[in-house]
Image 1 (spheres, rainbow, N blue to C red):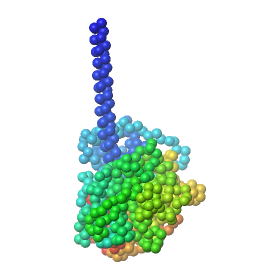
Image 2: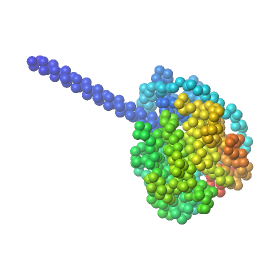
Image 3: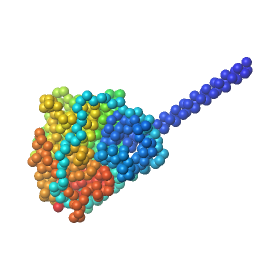
Image 4: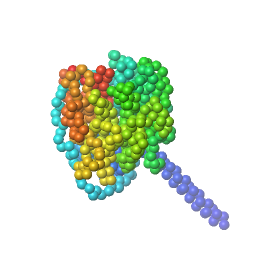
Length: 560
C-alpha cells in the first residue's frame, strides 16, 4: 500500500514538474515572441506587414523561401547586399525603388530574434484575380533631363535628434507671424526658431509638454505639424499636432473594436502667454483625438489659408490633412472609403467655436457635408496620405498625396470632391479586392462616378513619394517666377510646373531643377551620400524657398 501511494506521489510530482516546466517554457517563448514583435513594430512595421506589399515587401511565408543568413545580413546592411549583386536584394531594390536603412545598431541578438520571428510568419492568403492585369509602367513618358539650373546655399545643419539614420526628422517649415522669423519642426519633438544669423533655438518642445508624447515607431510619428492663427497677434492662438500611444485617452474618432489601434493623433490649441516671445509658454487645450491603425499615413499637415481675408468665409478655418492611417494596406479599405469617417480626408474646422460633437471646436456652416450624408468636418475625401496643403495666389488650393505603389499626385481641391483612394490612384483604377499595389486603366463608366483627378502626377519610375511645395513668390530666383515648386522625398529630386499649366482635367508638364552648389552641378543624393534623402520644402516670409534633407539635417536656400 505504501509502495502504491509512493508510486502515485512520484507520478503526480513528475506530472506537476512537467506542467510547471511547460508553463515556464511557454511563458519564456511568449516573452521572446513579444520582444521580437515589439522589435518588428518599432523598426519594420512602417514599411512591412504580413498581408501585402507596402513601402517594402510583405514578409509572410519567408521560411523555406529565404535563407536565414541572408535575412540577418540584409537587416545589418541592405546596401552592401545590393552592391554585392545578391539576386534577391537586387530584385527587391528594382521593384521597390529604395534602399532600406541599415539596422546594425540593433545588435546580433536582437537581429537574430527578429529573423526568428519573421520565419514563423505564414504566407498571406491571396485571392485569385479575375480582373485585368495591372499596368507595368502606368506613365511611360519620362520627365526628362533638368531644364533649369537653380543655385542653392547651405543655411545651417540642425542638431541631430536620432542616433541612426535619419539623423534628424526636420519636417515642416513655417513663419512666426509677428517676428517673421523662420520656424522648423523636427518630428522628434523640438520646434526651432531661427535668428537673423540663422541660429536655431528651441521655441517649443513637445517632449516637455506632453507626458505621453511618442515619436516611436518612426516615419511620420511625433510632432506632426504646427500653425499660427491668422489673428495670432491679438488672440495668441497657436496649434500643434502630435502622436500618443494607443488608448492614452478616449478618441473622438474611432472605428470598430476588432480593428487594431497603433497610435492616436492629437490636435491642441495653445493660448500663448507672450505673442512676440521666441520661446513658447502657455497652456494647451485638446481639440480632437483620432485613432489610427498603423504609424503611417497619419495627420500630415495643419494650416490656415494664407490668402483669406477677414471678410472671407475661409478666414480663420483650420485645415487638417488626415491620411488613411495605413488602414487600406492592412485590409480595411472601408475605413478610408467611408465619407462619414475622418480617415483619408482633408478636414476643415473652426477652432474658436464650440459646435462640434465633442464641444471643443466649431463646424463651418460652409463645409460641404453639413446637413448631408457625410461627416461634418470633411472638406474633401479620397486621399491616401495628404502630406501638404498649400494655396496658389489665385486662390486655388493644392493638396499633394503620397501614393501606394504606382502614382504620386497633386490635386486642385474643391469642397466635397472625391479624389478616389482607395479605388483610384492618380488617374488609374485600383481593385483592393485583389491587390492594392497595382493600377489599371479607368473603366469606361468612370465619368459617371464623379472622381476628381490630379493636375500633376508621376509614377515610380521617377520617384517613390511626392512632397508638396509652394508657388514661388520670392525674388531670389527670377527664373522660378510663375512656377509651383515641389519635390520627391526618397530620391531628393526638385521639380516645378508652370502655374498657368495647372488646370483641372489634365496633368501639367513636370520639369526638373538642376541644383548647383558653389558653382558645381550636384544632387541631394551626392550631398548627403545617402540613398534615402528624406526631402522636405519650406517657404519663408519673403516667399523664398528652402529644401531640407532629413538624412543629415541640412537646410538649403534656393538663390540666384
